[in-house]
Amino acid sequence: MRQTIVEKILSEHSGKRVKAGDAVVANVDLCYGNDCTGQDVASAFLSLGAEALIDPARVFMVMDHAAPSPSIPAAGAHHRIRSFSSEYGSRVLDVGLGISQQALMEAGHLTCGDLIVGADTHTTTCGALNAMAVGVSATDVSLVMASGKCWFRVPETIKVIFEGVLSKGVYAKDMALALLKETGAVLSEYKAIELEGSSVSDLSMDGRFTLSSMCAETGAKCGILKADKKTFEWIKKHSAKEPKPQDPDPDARYAEVRKIDVSALSPKIARPHSAYDVCDIDDAIGISVDAIMIGSCANGRIEDMEVAARVLKGKKVAKGVKLIITPASRKTYLTMVKKGLVELFIDSGATINNPGCGPCAGKHQGVLGDGEVALSTSGVNGVGRMGSPRSDIYIASPATAAATAIAGKISDPREYKRKL
Image (cartoon, rainbow, N blue to C red; front, side, top):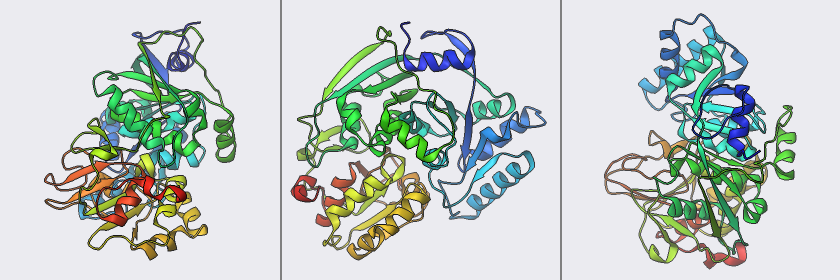
């Protein structure tokens, strides 16, 4: 007894009972690199002198950040990653399938209770499926490729309980930004965050993915949710893997317990150049923008697109403003087509990118120039994240992004309350 979710998962995968602070070597269910980190993963693996992958079925390379390749160096990286995968048998999720976490989940490669490591900060997204999903270095991924194992210091856990009912125009992204304002960078460093409460239960799986994705911005090792009926239904739809759900013990030991009442929550904005510099929408109203980006691992799923579409329907993007929409996955893109959202967005004046990370990664498909101001639905707004280090990035929900695109300045989505 007295174990948190991550303590139970690491116990299961290490073959011994563990507690926070212990150092363990655990069996890993899935590991991956992407087109930014894959070359380093491959090089680190080769430097080990390993002759083969321990289990090729558990090793993935995903082309999502600079895909399709926008430059000769990026094309070379893709080629080298594909060549490595061809020789050693790792599985490739190629250009157009979408962002690594979303593509892997939708393809059914993970389930409740799994232990996942990825050479990508936002591996935490998979925690919404009750998996312990951790972003690690390329070297760590290479060791998993060779041995099937990874070492961990078992993290302490912060429990965050969201209670109350969200108002119209307020979404999971606003909950995530409220969490960032609550925790800052230091409180959560190398800790797990358990997310629960009636407000979390009320969220769709798309909303839960937003929350777990943005746990990366808190500095947490992972963000993880308990499994419930919605989780099991999502997994059954996407995967043949048997769920192995893990719940915390009633008397589990937590480093801290925080409660956030969402009933009075307003739309939130994170100001440049920190995801922790969060304010209420009223404190940012009227700031002019040059570009809007709707997408990313934080908010590129179909629910996000539907919210933005409801606001944009019958409206036009402000003159001189770029609205760039990037689906998180091919499945999302196809659903957008079937539901008429692509036509709606194009009619409004938006540009639609292929599935992937898009301009969030600052490599192509809408990078910012000197002096430009963007509002993005991503989770990251550090200096130079989307291009020029002399640009500014604000972070908000898809609803706020759509309202801002219409006005050409940061706007309150609650002005469109009847549509939300």
